[in-house]
Image (cartoon, rainbow, N blue to C red; front, side, top):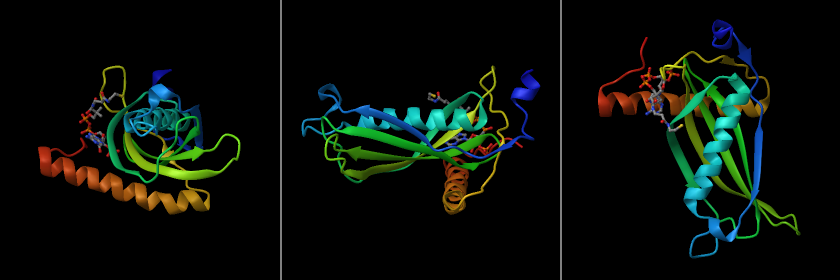
Length: 169
Ligand SMILES: CC(C)(COP(=O)(O)OP(=O)(O)OC[C@H]1O[C@@H](n2cnc3c(N)ncnc32)[C@H](O)[C@@H]1OP(=O)(O)O)[C@@H](O)C(=O)NCCC(=O)NCCS
């Protein structure tokens, strides 16, 4: 039933989602490293899967928040996105995505990019609907919750300043 699907009384733990790929030549820039737009697409997909696995409801990407491309991922390397819901608002989720580059034979692995995404759950009419509460039960989740909360607050402030809008009550 739709009512059950969209129930907001639900509360779940958020799983860490891993999405891996190989950096092929058509995904690189002129430096032979992964093109930022392709990295963003991978991150956005990982964020969507993390949101789906958490709430099992449709979501759309409402915003990309801070994204720091700290180190390149090279052509021929394994690129892996690790995504987790770190904060649940009323109808939105903040998802953290780390991207690692990994040498396929030496196994050397490094954190290359970190970004945050606001994913909003929507009903069949495209309007936002309630999400489950997030159960914060491990140390990593406890550490990341305040980061997500701060991002959610910043989004509200930004929307109010730019557009004069606040989330509907
Ligand atoms: C995201 C969307 C559904 C929000 O609709 P809306 O009527 O403005 O939503 P509301 O004002 O009721 O806010 C609902 C939630 O969305 C969040 N939100 C809305 N606009 C946002 C934005 N620009 N950035 C980040 N979060 C946003 C709010 O913070 C709120 O979260 P909360 O309920 O947890 O507090 C709507 O703007 C939309 O459909 N955008 C296009 C999405 C899209 O096409 N994405 C790309 C492809 S997936």
